[in-house]
Length: 137
Image 1 (cartoon, one colour):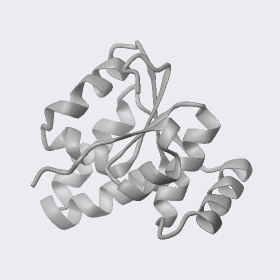
Image 2: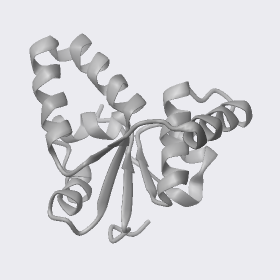
Image 3: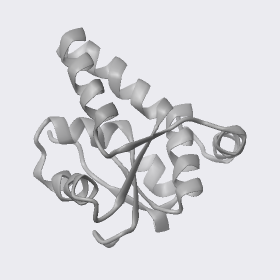
Image 4: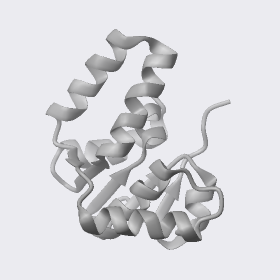
């Protein structure tokens, strides 16, 4: 997938990789932060990022990172009727996808972008519109 995509949708795992300093995701965030691409994250995926960060790094770190994202040029997308319905349809057809994954996919459908994910099941569900990043070992 091209780094030059107009719209990029980030799942919680890729946001976590950014905060972990993983170099492979940085160019995508840089494109959003410099205005070269529009960046989106589902409200549901932002909640997932927040609770997982609390569990791994503590509430204070989670709060700081959460507020940084909210104040950045990354646009937080609240589910509306269309995205909610599409997420439900992804859940019906996607074997083993979490509901948060389905909201990421539905948000990507709505924004007609490229979904950046760490979840192989998401990549398999929508291979043509996703970029998969491996978690560091």
